[in-house]
Image (cartoon, rainbow, N blue to C red; front, side, top):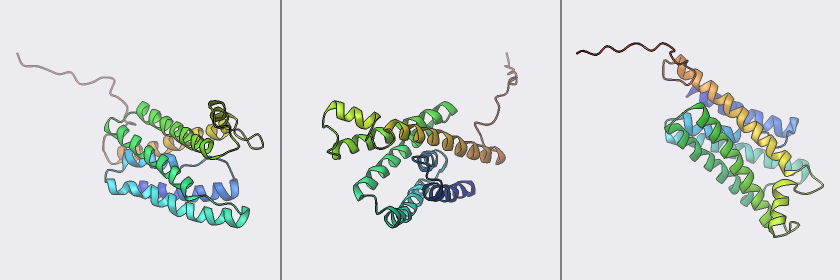
Length: 200
């Protein structure tokens, strides 16, 4: 619990600093926090913690963007993003039922791809500068608007951040389990398992 709360607080702090000072586009730990929260937080009501942290930081960032750039997020945009984080939560729950390193990385990859697919498809659907055709959808998924960095650039940043922060969170939580004497994926497999003796 302590590790999870500390990581949540650090996630919010990093997100605010990254968005306002570092200005690294689409490099955020929030997706990884939602995904790993469902894997490691046993009490389901604690799954709301990442969303509370996200909403509070969104409120502050929205105020910051309005003051600095006269730009804010629309409610539909926020709800769509929260839906993607909810999907990450569901993927984390599935992974928690049969946890392994391959399942964790596969789930993080899937969560990142869902966010990319859903948000860019939604942008294509509402942005009338895109042709409402398959070619226009492909432009929204790959190039985006020519005056901005490509959509693939943003997806690459999201993918790297999701995998990196998922690895960090998972290692910390597995280490906490190891210290507490609980089963952990960090526990090396015994190369010489004890021999079983059967009575005849």
